[in-house]
Length: 292
View 1 (cartoon, rainbow, N blue to C red):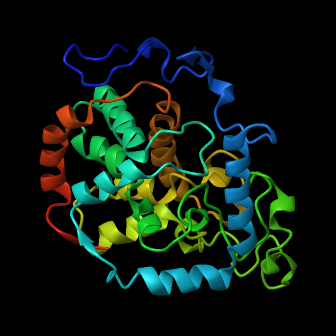
View 2: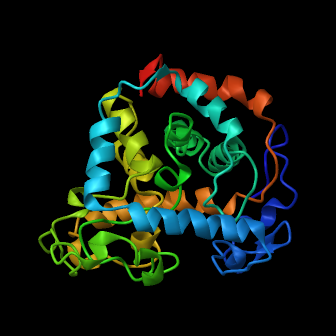
C-alpha cells in the first residue's frame, strides 16, 4: 500500500511494510525484537541491563506501590501534546529496534495506521499516543519500570518473557510459594483484566485516559493497556488464566501491534507538518489539560 502523495511520512520502501515474509529499509522482519547478547554491541547490552533490572525488581508489592503512587493522578498537569513533546527527549532503553527519540516512533505508528484506516481517526490517535505513559521517566522513575514488555506478576513467570528465568533469579517472588505456581494468586480463567500487570507505561496511560474521561472506544483502550504484553499476545503464555471474551481484546491488540512494531524503521516523519492534523484529533478524543 503506497503512501498518499501529500503524506508527511518519508518512507523509503513502503511496499514492504507489514509483509511478514519480507523486509523494508534493509531489515528482515525476523530481525525485529532480537534480544541476543552481544557484549560488543552497546545497544544490546543496554537493553539487557534494562530488562534484568526490571525483572529483578518487579514484584507484586512493587507494582502495588507504584499503583498507589501514580494512580492518585497528582504528579503534573499537561495536555496530550505536551506529554508527547516530552518524548522527543526519550530514547527507549529497552528497545533493540530503534535508537530514535520516542516521538518519532509515535508519528511513524500513527501515520501508517492513517494510511490503512483513513476513516478511523480514533485508531490513528491511539497510534500517536500509545507510548505517552513513558513521561513517568521524567518524573523520577527509572526506565526499567516505565518501558519494555509487560507481564503478569503474582504467578509463575511466562516462558516467553525476554531473557527467561535467569533474569528473574534475584526477584524474591520467584521463590514465594504464593506467587510461583502457574495460577499463583489467581483463579483459573479469571480473565485478562483481573491480572496484575508489571508496572509500566501501558497500564499508566490506560489509567490516565480513563481518569480523564477519554472518548476512545473500548478496544482502543485495550490496545493501550496491553500492547506491550508480548508474552501473552505473541508468546501464548498465561492462556490458563484467560477467559473466552479475552479473544476480542487479543484481536484488537494484535491489529494495533503490527503498526507499533514494524514501522520502527520506516522513515522519519515531518512532525511539525503533522501536528495540526493530530491536534484536531486530540481535541476530539482527549482534549484539554489532563491530570497525570
